[in-house]
Length: 75
View 1 (cartoon, rainbow, N blue to C red):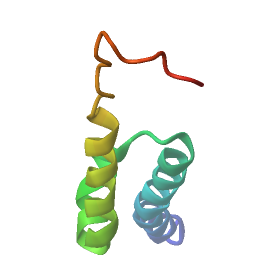
View 2: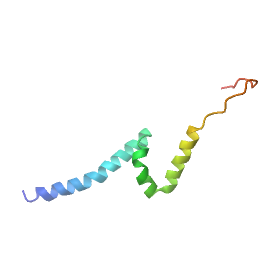
View 3: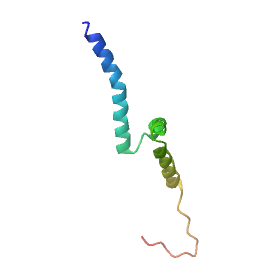
View 4: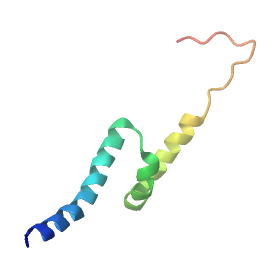
């Protein structure tokens, strides 16, 4: 019984970083979860955070609307 208490404490302590690592891997694969991981990404890799913001800005831009006299776009 005396070994079980410290063992559970160590297990609880190690499960938190393991949970974050699991979530980060899952978020990277699916492309979601950036809002939850953004503070950690900004702390550890500010360049990647700025790059992600630039990608979001470019995705939000819309293609220019063609003028009425423009020829149809080719695919």
